[in-house]
Image (cartoon, rainbow, N blue to C red; front, side):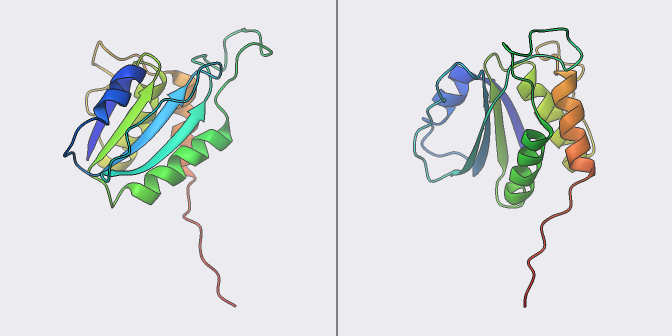
Length: 151
């Protein structure tokens, strides 16, 4: 599996590719920004759109001003990843700068599915958001696919 960690602008331009591997996109934006636009390509198998600020949970920030990632959003990421893991060859994970929130999600998914961190922790381009990482890891460890019940 390929995990691409990209800034907002590069994720959008990546969808201009004509022929790319089947891809699922996790799009993380700041709440005050408009949604990122992606070209309509047959190889894009799904897009998960999330909005939360790049803040650590333990930071003493104005909770009225900043929106922290929630457990529900972490669960959405995990459900989306499981839904697409066996049908795509690439995950594009982006946030505004492509360094903190997206890196945290990508490293958590990589550790869970691939059993390694893909050198994300040691790569100087990235500084994974610890709050986003912890919530995503917790959701991954507690995930149980929904069962269809028949009557």
